[in-house]
Image (cartoon, rainbow, N blue to C red; front, top):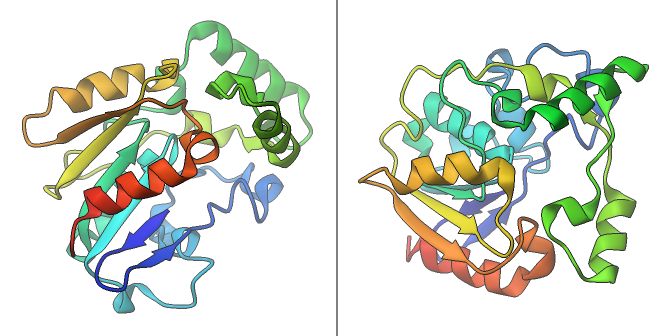
Length: 225
């Protein structure tokens, strides 16, 4: 998600192609999270006809695995960005991949699922894995969830600069319950002296569980622009 700063604010939701538009095609791509040859902007701004040249002073928000995507954008296009907000995100250092942050039993299951599939994808996790408890929320997420390209688990992060690349960063940790896959990333973020660290009493899928509270928090963190 991209929050355009300024008054009035514009909010642009990027379409991560590997999950929505053509997951089966992207499952075969080597660079499934962050594709340098595409310079990432087409994936993030597929829902917006405007080019990078028309976007500036941007507050970029990445939830969960999309934390790796906004890290990549900051690495390549820092001059377009004003702030990064990592929402219960994974923070991959240069050379790391998602499997490095995945418990071994789950990693083994993911590998086996991908090997059994015809298109190198893995089935989505059930909504309860992200802490949702409301039955309507659970049914909605399970209904809309799509297979995920296994390449997103194995692709190594390629950064030329430290995470954030000198841009002001905020990490929002969801604590009810804390999501295991983001534990190491949240600890790392909390230790960074120049990062803001915020806790929110919500599950990992906070945008489903508490959308109003989350929107209010993001607007507050984005500041006046």
